Amino acid sequence: MSAKDQRRAAIVVGATMLALGLVGGWSAHRALGYPHRALRDGDTHPVRLVVTKNMTAAAIGHALADRGVIEHPRWFRVYATERGDSQKVRPGQYTFTPSMSPAQIIDALIAGVPEEEIAVTIPEGKNLLEVAMILEDGGVCPHEEFERAARDPSLLEKLGVPGESAEGYLFPDRYQFRPATPAPKVIARLVKHGKEVYAELREHHKAGVAALQKAYKFDDHQIVLMASLVEKETAEPSERPRIAGVFLNRLRLPTFVPHLLQTDPTIVYGCTVPVELSAACKKFEGRIHKIQLEDKDNPYNTYTHEGLPPGPICNPGRAALEAVMQPDSTPYLYFVSKNDGTHYFSKTRAEHEAAVDRYQRHRSDAPAE
Image 1 (cartoon, helix red, strand yellow):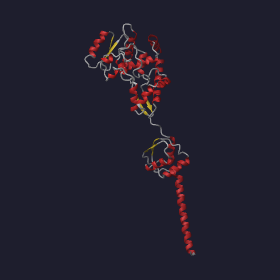
Image 2 (tube, helix red, strand yellow):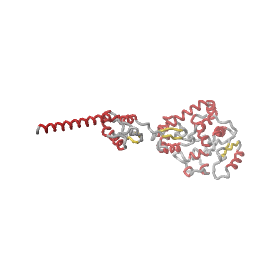
Image 3 (spheres, rainbow, N blue to C red):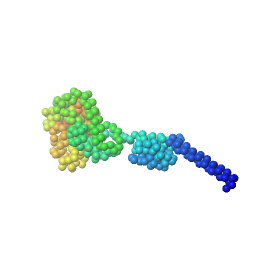
Image 4 (spheres, helix red, strand yellow):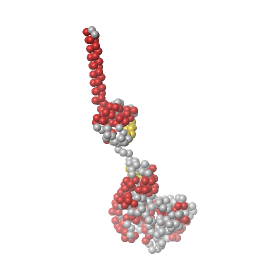
């Protein structure tokens, strides 16, 4: 090779080395600046990505690149690994934008997203089966799981709930739950809230509670039970204390014998909610007939059994509990629906029968009280 050719070769090699150096330097500069460089500044178009448990940084990088959020998914993986954060990513549904840098994205993945919460409202007067369906429809927990937990003796003992189920203590209110919350945890939340409300009311109505204990030997459970009857009998707030007074009169006054509460919702409850049903209840199809009214095998039938039923028949709210703690002092012993959400109250059987003729006997619906 001539001296001239050698000089040319040296120039080419030098130029090549310089170019490679420039490219390498540019690439190194690009790589070093990658974590803090957004793909498109100002582009706030939201892109949602569900990150599952054990999803790798490489998989996340490719998913983000496919969605146009980042470039160079391999660099993303290397950066996350070098930061030592690839194992700290939290699962969840994220929203990213192309204006976010890889560093910001990693920061978000480590911080996690607040878990979605479901708002559910449990109305007053629903029984445990109805509460279970409300929670299932809301995505909180399966109704079978809730029903099973609501009858679990060990859970009931732990929560201090008397009886064979949590009926009466699943306090009606608006709640926020995470999706797929375990049923025992849901029940514990409802019961805890209910006990807090009850304690507040009990403190406020000390005299009324003491009077119930003295005259009727009522404990807290029996007050809740009576409130469940009041809750099911009327949705009219002004009537609750009066209906509580009527029920208490039926239990106490010697002129009302036998001491039958004769309230239809107890029959319906006994025919729908308990695990074991009487023969007559197995024939119940939504309306009370003579066979259910005369059924002595239904322990909740307050037409055939004196006194209170075995347990609450729904989950009463604050107003019903307060009505029992502070009932009206009333002479009434009877009441009948006027078909407008209110009731007609009577002192005597004869007056009551006249009211039944007026408001009910022309209807095909069986129950009068």
